[in-house]
Length: 395
Ligand SMILES: Cc1cc2nc3c(=O)[nH]c(=O)nc-3n(C[C@H](O)[C@H](O)[C@H](O)COP(=O)(O)O)c2cc1C
Ligand SMILES: O=C(O)C(=O)c1ccccc1
Image 1 (cartoon, rainbow, N blue to C red):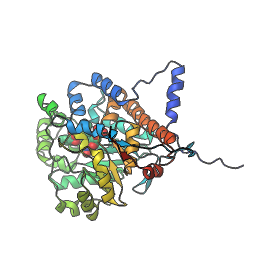
Image 2: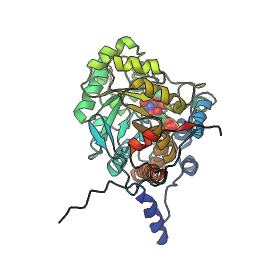
Image 3: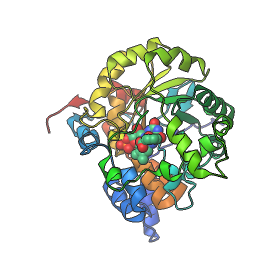
Image 4: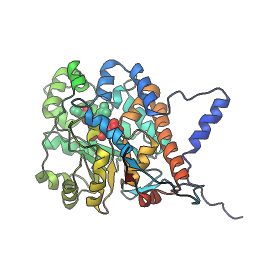
């Protein structure tokens, strides 16, 4: 008997699942669109967590612009193309990922759920959906425990390089041993940007002892302390604050490269010259991002910087985040050349409203919309999306 051809997962089927559940009176517990999602999460989250998660730097112009600028880009539908099956898979770091979506590192996932284990919940959302999690250095649970929840889904480890090189090396060793598939070094946050919402409330979760489990569980970090974090948490937090952010320069690239045989990704690259320099120095992927508008205000919208970074990166993969709010935004970023795209705040709001299932729902909605857009636009694969491209349009 002939084996029917394998049908790639049709993420758009989630739409039917929602409609059919409605026949039994079951409506989505977590909203399917970003605006409603954000409003519901804002009502549910404790104020300190909300301002940290929702806010950005300065008057938040760059943050707003990140999302608004997607409207400048438009795609053209093509007809009479068989799109009855879509294949959203992409190749990255020698793996075939079922979709080009990943969860960006969000250092306060831990406190987005009421039980304080939001990092584990994000990892479970990855396991449910097959969407990789880029796990932040800032975590309420040690990176090993997070990795253990990922199931078959790959995880990437986002590294904040402390001032203490031995601590950096220890964190990278632990991430490798725990099975993470790439090391993502964030370049744009060795110091925090000017964040008025948090400043007005004197609110910085880390200084209240949150999300520091990777430091408190680390033998090198513990060796810097006179008393253990369990005995004297305030002193441990003080030590963290002193050691947090090393100022990296290009001169550090050989050292960074020598830390791991895993793919090395540089996060926060926005200029084509920086992309070229990173690749020349051994980076395996470029991560174009302006940190969701949380670091430098007054910047160009991240999506508008992507085409030049892609052009400069040649065959090197380019990851992208900052401002993606919908499946349509996802497809636009892919059309502009991103290899894979991340979301930050959207899935964190999902965590806040429904834990692992809530975050998984947000990811499924993004994928369903992207899949259906590809179906109606006549783009059956991500390669077709890239070939079609997107054009600048006046609003
Ligand atoms: C609350 C919060 C915490 C974040 N923490 C980290 C972090 O620990 N490491 C990091 O590299 N990026 C961090 N980011 C930035 C995200 O990885 C990502 O670049 C950004 O959220 C993307 O923009 P979006 O929120 O508009 O999707 C954080 C973002 C938010 C909103
Ligand atoms: O809040 C952030 O975006 C973030 O990544 C961070 C992490 C640690 C210290 C300061 C900022």
